[in-house]
Length: 402
Image (cartoon, rainbow, N blue to C red; front, top):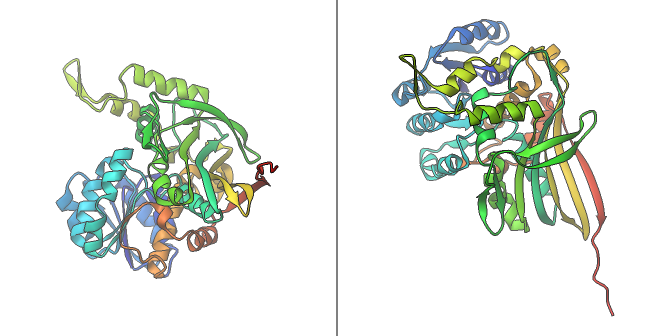
């Protein structure tokens, strides 16, 4: 198999480092508009694999350039900014290359990507939209839990981290651009009556969620995210689901800083003139934040992502929390990466494993919850990303009879 990763940042590096462990890999293409990091990574990977490692300068804004690079490539992971998803999908449709990304630009953008289903089927290829940790693992965890239920009432995705970071200043453990964009957008949710819907303002519906120890209770907020865009329609509605949302645990100082960025218009993508020089405000903010890879070894604590599914099984109320948890220090010691980046890079590697083994044969464009969860979660554990289930049950109240 010939694989490619476009965008060789932290997550792209994790994916590449995992995929070279596989015997089925013949070639790995590392593509980025700036190739210095890719060249350094290639040097390390060549000592670990017999597969050919190729580095190419690729501008994700140029479809023809992507198309040329993907000729003869079997599967590509887009690990760059979601703004370029459609460019890479277009190139994949032309070259008949299977496609995986890890995030979308917006809920509407995800729906537009899924509308390419017919075109990808005609090309005989698979496109998986949003296969990182969340979205990604979280969708598959939700599917695993839904499959255990006779009836589903709610699907709730929760992401929490209790870490302390050795950094003085504003930072994010994943893409700074994405963190700012999704936190300042109106959060989306889903109901059986409304379908996709939105809260009126960012950081809505604060709640305290009890994560497994050693994390414990954290304050969580509704944030724009992919899972609530699809889970209700794909796997929830058929079992009676009434509500789906996503909430993210955010520290007060993070929330206040992001709000200030929004109040000042520093989240804008539009050029402004500063003393005769055109700058993009958000680019200035991001340039002053560390890259997620630069935080490796500086993050101390635990990261937990999972899906809470509430419903009924065999006349009992049942609640399942299917989750994965990782310790930043342990992951750094084993891999050299911080846990959030590592947790995001493992799931797409598992998808490529299943493609190579013939266990993932779907065609068209799908969200991750349409992947069979059992072989996926089995392989994920084999690659070292552990997951567990917390179960709560109680009797269903019975109507009194006269």
